[in-house]
Image 1 (cartoon, rainbow, N blue to C red):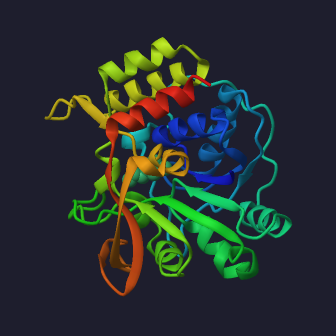
Image 2 (image 1 turned 90 degrees about the vertical axis):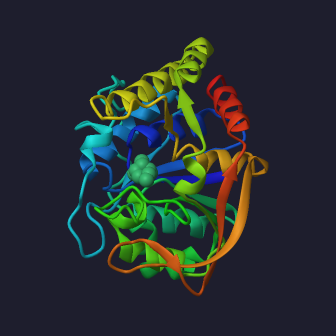
Image 3 (image 1 turned 90 degrees about the horizontal axis):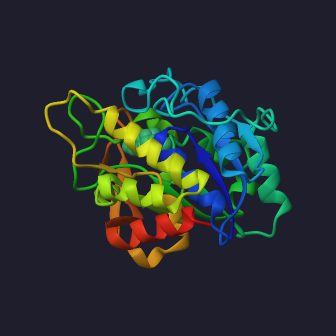
Length: 299
Ligand code: RIB
Ligand code: CA
């Protein structure tokens, strides 16, 4: 199953990528990076570090340095100033393969048989929107977009009113262009990802798996906990948002989809009732996902 991962690593992005690179049933053609959790130079360097940790040589193509028509708004409070919660990773094995992720996506889609490549989207949708704008013929050849983003019935995680979710809110224009384009798309919102949680037992389980990627994921989840230290509520677990995307590609049976009629609110990026029919994941088998993630990281 060939796929391109579009990402802003990012603690949970890193877990998703380590898993996706190691499982035999996914053929990750490349990582494309975008500004989101942290600036583009950091997300791109982190993508190279994660590839080095996975030990699976994979090209990294740098993409958009800012949302469409806006300034970047990094989230160092969650992911740390290095974007990986201070967890030590090896140096990248190589420089980025290019600094034009959108051109790479278009070339890869045009070179492959139509409808054979999935886009696994873990970040603001700036790169994907630019692909649709500038390479519509390539965009028409995308097999499926699986994107983590939005909040449907649950509160979001962005802004004072918490109506929006980070990936859509960071670039609402891009989110609207992609989600309203009528592509074969599955959206995995906070409604689903907040059900997939890691606690101390799961961290211990990953350490027992013992591979470099699984130990790195244990360290990343611990860092995720550390980012919330001092907050009033002691967190017993942390949600694994982005890992839901490759897990859906591999095990859609572990997700419950609903069809909803939604639209992206232009200014805020909030998902509100609208005319666009979307497949959204609203439930997960959390135990099944934890087993699938731990098994994948053992590969
Ligand atoms: O809201 C969760 C999303 O925002 C995840 O992709 C996380 O990495 C952050 O980018
Ligand atoms: Ca992300």
